[in-house]
Amino acid sequence: MEKVIYFDNNATTKVDERVIKEMLPYFTEHYGNASSKQHAYGWAAEAAIDKARQQVANLIGAEPSEIIFTSGATEACNTAIKGIYKAYKTKGDHIITVKTEHKAVLDTCEYLSENENADITYINVDREGLIDLDELKASIKPTTILIAIMAANNETGVIQPLEKISEIVKQHKIIFFSDATQYAGKMQCDVNEFGIDCMALSAHKFQGPKGIGALYIRRKDPRVSILPLIHGGAQENNRRAGTLNVPLIAGLGKAAEIAQAELWDTNTFTSKLRGYLEHQLLDMPGLRINGTTRDRLYNTSNITFPPDFKLIPE
Image (cartoon, rainbow, N blue to C red; front, side, top):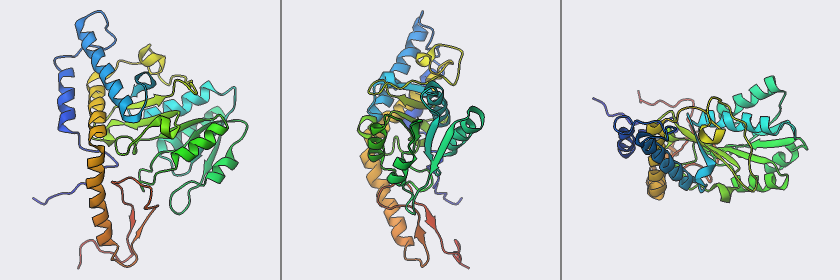
């Protein structure tokens, strides 16, 4: 049997065995509902939720009370953008985002434009995949309530200048949301250092299970208001109704803990592999690396091959 090398880790990653081990008891032994606070089964589930919330908060430099669990980053992006728009609609209707955002952001903005009369501005990126900060400044209006810019691109790995974006945002007292689906768990991330007010992440991008993610919502300086996307219960501080998926949340928490502990070793090892691959390929005439090579994810390489390239020589 041929050995297969998996190169699609921005799409999803293999679940770490330690994460699986963490999840298993909550399928069988500790199967209580975290909202059932009248008995020991519920207490065990609630304790698992609290532990995971702390682990995710530690990963991104937040407080546990600022983390809500979602079904993944797509739901987190929808909750943030729609929830902020509805909460601040009386202050303004203008949102700024980037043409190269993930569809979880672009489609959500399109929905608000077509159905809620939102005013959306889509700014460009340059040849290196980076936004123009002057264009961002020029796009701000008195009615701008939200700027949504991803931390790192899922195709090129290009990392946007989050701290510089935040400086502009704070000057105008606008909310800064970042889709950090590709960034969190791979790069050192501190929402306070970056000045991010709201941020989405997903477990399966860093060796956690699919179907679980989180949304960070700042509680002070400024306190961000979000109207819920899903109704039907008081879970997650009334911001996301529904029975909490304890096994997957426990898995997300463990994956966050592992990612934080092993961040630098993983970064160093994978960077060397990526560097070796690109160094060998760049001897080929006509080959080009897309996006900046200065600020990008350590695991990502986006390459244009020459038209006459053949994977298997004749």
